Image (cartoon, rainbow, N blue to C red; front, side, top):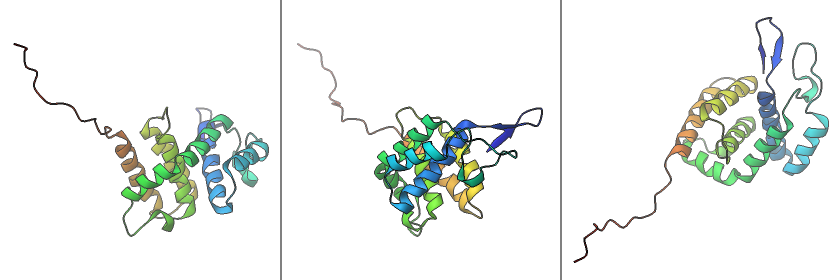
Length: 177
């Protein structure tokens, strides 16, 4: 999750690092059954903002240069809105691939992206999809990243649909006599 500038020096993308950490935390919350606040505190104390090794990699589970604020927002948002996100994913996923059948890392990525897409001040969908696709390629192989792309695209479209409008009185105005 690093970029190179013109001088070929690795440039860490702190927002991407935050999202990687959020996916890891959501995975841990689901797999270990730990509370979100416990996992967030654990990450803040032991994994975020640690120094990067020379090659710019994420050694020993450390997530260098992560934005702790964004990390917390993504994790808390995904957990708080998980029921809504899961409902939308249930509508999008084929019946033969229910959410529970998916790889837990893939589920964590979908929840993190869904948490951002359903937030009060969401980042543009194309940015979220790009970020989580980059992350997916770091964790997943085969057809899973391609499936993720389709699911996140469908999720963003579903969330952009106009909300149901309240019933309007369509009686034509008539001039008073």
